[in-house]
Amino acid sequence: MNIRDIIPALVVVGVIFVIWTAAVIPMNAHLTADQAQRDGLIMTPEAPRDRQAYTGLTLVIKNPAIIAMTYTLIRPRLPSPHQVAIEMYETIFTKAPTSRRSLVYHAWVTLSATLLGFVMGTTMGVLLAVGIVYNRTMDKSVMPWAITSQTIPILALAPMIIVMLGAIGIQGLFPKSIISAYLSFFPVVVGMVKGLRSPDRMQLDLLRTYSANAHQGFWKLRLPASMPYLFASLKIGISAALVGAIVAELPTGARAGFGARMLVGDQYGQPMVTWAALFGAAITAALLVAILSWIERRTLARMGMGATA
Image (cartoon, rainbow, N blue to C red; front, top):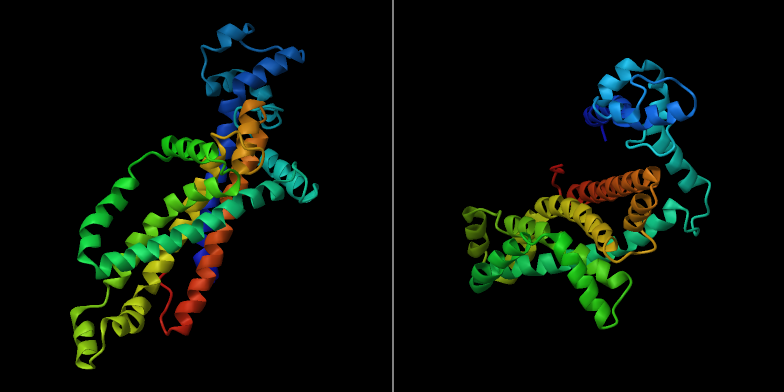
């Protein structure tokens, strides 16, 4: 990867961190002022009820001494970047990967459901795309339902699937994988259909002049032409699969996984745990997309095509 391709992404990340760091001060101002007053500092205004009439920024302007303290609050409304970084370091590098306190352990729990759901969703998406392209009945019947399926809110659907499968004794990894597959199959269907239909009429007519049948046309023209579209869809699908696994962990009170860590952070007032899980999920998604991008470049290079992304 060229360094010039990384710089724009780093600039965006830098801007986000600057905005985040600046937002910590007004977001934590009221909690910090209350804590500072309990520690013996004089606040303006003195009564906590009166301070609620001020915005966080106004309160900080009246009490500049609390600015530094907003970055070290134990239970902040918005943790600072370095607090999240410390939480991630402690839960990744100072805990055994098999410990329930390790973020690596929870990452693997979510990742295993993600990968299984991604394989299921991708397989289903490719098979449906082939059927849609080669069968007019499927094109008219399946595609509208595939589009309609994505209008159902996953937060409403996930608990129903988890509960129904649990009622028949199916628990653990598989129900979460179903949610991941549900979210990941759609971009694969759309991308693969677009890719399989990408050869133009002249290319198809050329194959017919060689007396190629539909089977040969699929393997020698349509499938190779669909590869750039398929990989673009896979990168969307793997991210959606990870989100699906996390969402599936939320309504079940799961004991492990990124979703479980987010629940623990919210229920027990530990925002750093929640934020560390959020960033852990984001980093995991970025790594999965990077792996797919690497496979894409290698595959397209071997096929004599340049990567499109």
